[in-house]
Length: 173
Image (cartoon, rainbow, N blue to C red):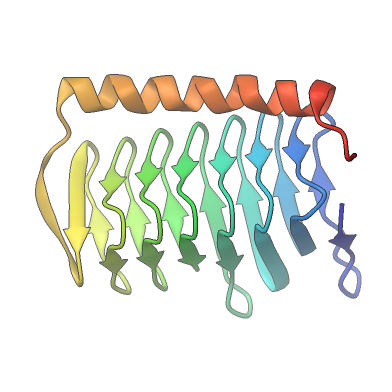
């Protein structure tokens, strides 16, 4: 897998995480155990740091970047959907970031928040715990239903299991 040091910053990937060979990690990146980093993901921490905490799934073609001296933190058990862009954000545990969502500088998703697919979360927006935000620009729409919360938790567990299956069963042919 393409993992690159940048100056004195070297990515740290748990041996219990799965990073696809076509993902790219550069610089001050940490990926904790049970994470799933899919094909096409680019995590570029050349001028700041990126922390991906335990059990998080970063799906195909996600881009994560950070400004000088800043950081991105994606807490435990987060699902980051295909094609999302995260730039200088803090994502709380158990959040779902929908496909192709864009989260800009200093946006915060509190624990269990959900960002709808294709949404643009503007700089400095805070999405409260248990709320759904969607649109361009994103607005708080409503509370997450118990059924959605259950689906979110099931999705996290699915990707933890999938990471293990990929480590054991994926091979290039």
